[in-house]
Amino acid sequence: MSETPGTASGAASGPPGLPEARGPLSAAVRTALPQAPPPGELPEAGDADPFAEDLQLALYLAYELHYRGFAGVDEAWEWQPDLLRLRAALEDRFLGALREAVPGGADVAGALDGLLAEPLDAPGVSHHLQRRGTWGQMREYLAHRSLYQLKEADPQAWLIPRLTGQPKASLVAVAFDEFGAGHGDRVHARLFAEAMAGAGLDPGYGRYLDHAPAETLATVNLMSLLGLHRSLRGAMAGHFATLEITSSPGARRLARALERLGAEPRCVRFFTEHIEADAVHEQLMRRDVIGGFLAQEPDQAPAVVFGIQATDYLEARWSDRLLGAWAAGRPSLRLPLCDG
Image (cartoon, rainbow, N blue to C red; front, side):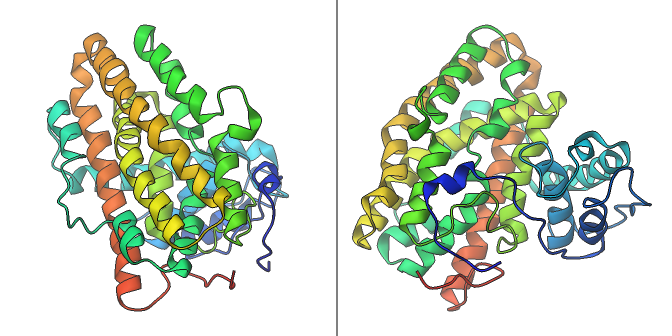
């Protein structure tokens, strides 16, 4: 499909088409989904690399059925037992690899404080874009992030029924802002679609799935994994707190980057909206959601720490992918973007 810059209405468009497969696991799922369920025999997860393209795409395909699905795919696939069995095996490999990759622990306050302890010469993507990023790199950034931002806060909304009392009320207050505070034109996913359109990108939902590498898919898959499992509610709380705590400083840097690059005001608006809002959300998440949740379920502290650390770990892998490619003079996406 050719890249055609669109309008923000693309964020409300129908389901995307199925992407190209990246290996035997994703090929099996990709082949099965256009058919009427049940499928033929689906493969075993085996010893597939949990962070590689094939497993991450297969997992993404299975998770996306809980969001908008795919064009031409029967909605009955969402809860098809054979696909769920394969998904569970993929999740086990992904979750196991994440648990091995992070240090763990139960010091929630220390883990949260660590998110803001960055040196002045921090090498993150938003720092690079603010200081010296090119317009082409900024457009790549938007394409990467579109896989989540066009459904912003949807995975985290699954945490709401897992909570009670003040933690639930405060989480809903955060989600209320994410979903536009009652105004459809202020829904954050809509604002991101407008930013994409202003950058000459197609804002259609799922448009850049084929472009996104495994490192990008993994950051979104983590959200779906944590949101869909009640047993991982503590990790989801830690994950959401991580997003809100790191969002405001990053949004400020990205707004400055876009202004430096002469971007349209609609490109900047998404990020300026997050500067103040997420500074408030940080306090709500840390004090009321995390603090209140742990007061009710103190044994969930290690799970909260895991959610923080796993999010930070995958974000670091994603950052290394982008910065490494840009330092080498290469695109960070799997497929090139059209000029815009």
